[in-house]
Image (cartoon, rainbow, N blue to C red; front, top):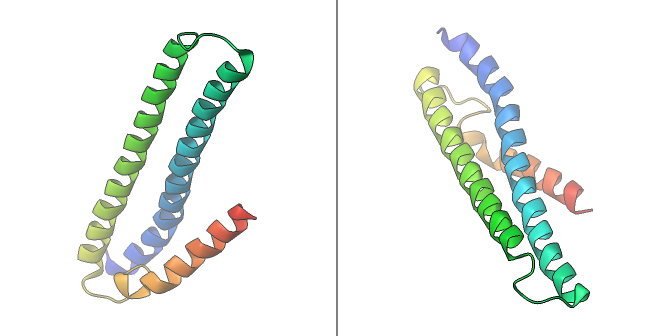
Length: 116
């Protein structure tokens, strides 16, 4: 693969990775909120603690799987970065570690927007 194309490919894949990382974080949040909501609903209904326990156990497994999925996405990110660094042959480009501060600033903007 010629070095000229590697930067273009990295740019395209970088956005996809960030979307996947955000999606896994959102899944973890959504499942955790559903789990908390189910416990709260059970309390408000005034039923015994055993009621809905199988549902809570399934949600616990779903939350664990979502966290595991997020970890896998992060591992893939690291692997792809390693491939990119090897293919770029030391070319300091916006998608190398030297550009990390600007990438982190962009992520903070996205996080701030989502928090608002």
